[in-house]
Length: 466
Image 1: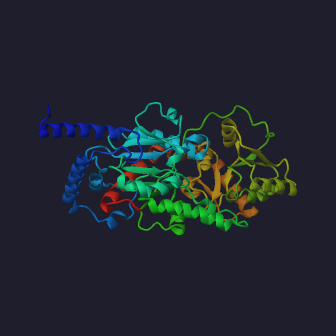
Image 2 (image 1 turned 180 degrees about the vertical axis):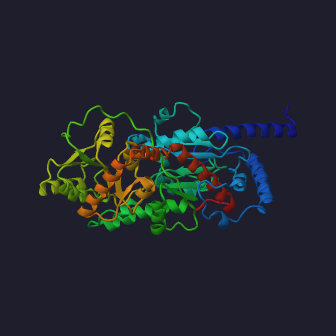
């Protein structure tokens, strides 16, 4: 016996709603689970009606693209920002955590801390969907997220070939927003209707010392980032310095750029004795991978002027610039006075921070500068380059270099030690300053950026590049 048409239609509608709810929770990619045509049409009609009601109240796209502080309120825009096909559900935000495969590198730690804190603030605000490498779900044992698995076929170099062919056949997008968490990411959403928040941590490659044939390399890297910018709805940076660098070197159009500072994590336990490579006696410290923009070689002049101190340059030194430093140390007769131990353990690093006379960071370009916060939390005076992001990190408690000449470095060191020793509370102030940078604040800044990107997308009616 056949069902009555009206009863069959009602049952199919209820079944379609249930399937739509399941699709909103599934870890599928970019609308690969399609809605039934009748349900999709019904939902789109409701969305268009709602958007028509809001049209008289909504600001223009150009108005929304004007800059606002990361913490500004966008209540009207948030109300208007609904994912296609899901008018009553929380936005599904995909967060690219692919760098968790390198958990001990800077981007790996960023991914871990951001993921943890976003899970804490997501309930009632958005549904997090983590884009994860195999096995990395273990870093979030409490759950609370959907997931998409990282795989080779999801790389942009492949998707750009199939996107024009598949786009007409995609159903309603299965995500409301995609967060590309670093400018070197190889992944973008398949569905060009999904808006993108792009984080650019730095453009350091533009500021490294020139070398033969480098123009082509710089052009290639810049073009790759420009393509991501063109696809993005909103750009986030770790510092105002990087935001300015992006504006100078990339075509961002009217896209808003939001500064979301990184957080600081409580350090591990320091080793209970000096590292084996370090003889007794006072020392200065700098830390980082030996790359040209770190500018470590200027500290050799300082080491030559301060015979009572050793200089420790800790960090990966198996690089061309590291080889250059080793040769310079030998040429200048500083062997035994300037130490390049390579990478050090977490315990040794904390011991070095806590026992150095001062921490120097003469970098020519930094997206943020976490080592400065780590040294401040250890209660040590920090002496840093002025014309980069480091002034945003060290604030009023940093000591700044206006020149890298040996006499300027020595003068800065002696001034820092004098003020440090004269103020009994200086160590405590340094620690409080470092603790003011929290990953919870970073996650809150990104949640606000997600809201704004959704609002911009809703007002413009499409994602850039769509």
